[in-house]
Image (cartoon, rainbow, N blue to C red; front, side, top):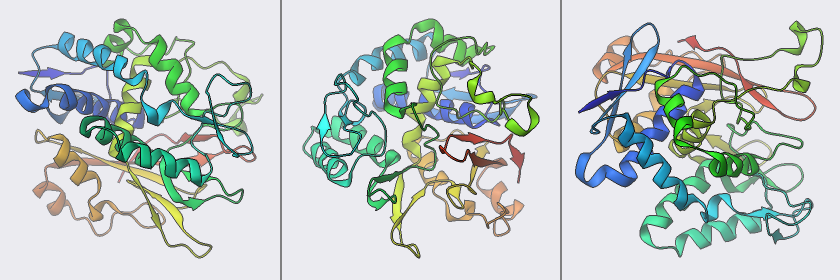
Length: 325
């Protein structure tokens, strides 16, 4: 039982994240009986194949059913005041729904996750650790978020995620899986594609004022895939800093590196592969320590890299078009 997701291109970070989101949700709901697995094939674009499901309709139904469980998911339904003084209701005026709470709120969220039932605890903790840690702080004393946090200003990460959750329909998921991606929706985007970068230097006007279309099914699946990229605190010259799985470099000089593989891999194996030390690269993104022989032994067909760019001021993030490394 194999289903090719021909709407997804794994050479784009958004497509890669979305494929991981499909694997995650199927593993959570069907894993005990079907052991879903993921592999990639080069068909002009890098197309993912899911092993362990009958057809795309099974995937769509599972994703839509899973949506309901996110309505009260603690990891995405919290909000806090602008000054970070306290946690508030997301409906409160001026509530901030982002990934930069004060450390005391982040610690409370982790404590809440630890006290949940086993299934809820696992997903809540996994989601929270993909957002950041309660140790690495910015210069305002707030949590330093994941390097994959691309929103800023009036864009709030959790607000976008909740809007996507509430508006998602089966046809959105079908578009994401089968394509083509029209990018015509007015629903918000997490800005994880490397295919539609809009550089101010190459434009007559500021592209931030343009209205971008999105592919909401892919955006939601990509959010689910974020859980494959946990954050950990590491020592830095100015105190603890946050390290995001598959990302190296500074906040404004980072790059995201990801492999595509030939064998059918389970969730646990994919998690292990993405945390492989051999995927660490130097400041220029070179994988000098990872020979092609070693890649072949692990079934890795190709490795991509996109640089992470951030606007100044503001910090809006974007990926550059991917390169093969």
